[in-house]
Length: 284
Image (cartoon, rainbow, N blue to C red; front, side):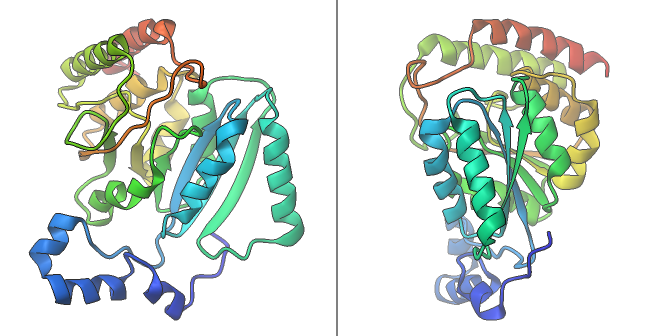
């Protein structure tokens, strides 16, 4: 990252800063802080948030506001995958504003990249992974189904040196989730179970958007990734499993959307996922 680091006063005022955490630790004690998820994020750490974007004009700016509001130093990497609904114009305007005025936001920098033609979520993620420069890389969809406020929880196992990869599960724990399609739920559970059979993992949500990596790990794997669409999910799961990386899973909330609201995954992607589970669990 080229941006100047936060001043000491700015860093000390942030939630999850070492001084903030030490104050809470003295008041509440170590046990309560661990239970509530309070910990210290190193002030020089940068989180790269990779956001693949395709026809998300209605939700993109609201999503970006939520991402920016998370009190962590972030590099936001937006990859437009050939949008046709005006999203590209929105991103170009955002890029022009950044170049013309510069950013005074010490916590957030934005990079925007464009695919000339729609290639799929997996292709957009590969572009984003190669451009990321942060210490930790997190995937964020451009809709409003997943809550960026949960970033501190998701990156904690990596910061504490316990994990190399973290999955956010929609089906683990008691976080709220919107009640929607039963057959989608069954399909997700079946694909996760089949993936677990081949990888010998015990994930509860292989198809989740929220996947978090140490940067050196995802940038080592990224050149080998082949799937351009939603087959990315079983492919990346198989590849991290075969490398025997330390994988953690944490519960997350989920506000699913309907097809009328822009949901894109369909039954054909489920068939493709079956093939990918077998293909990438057995060989490169």
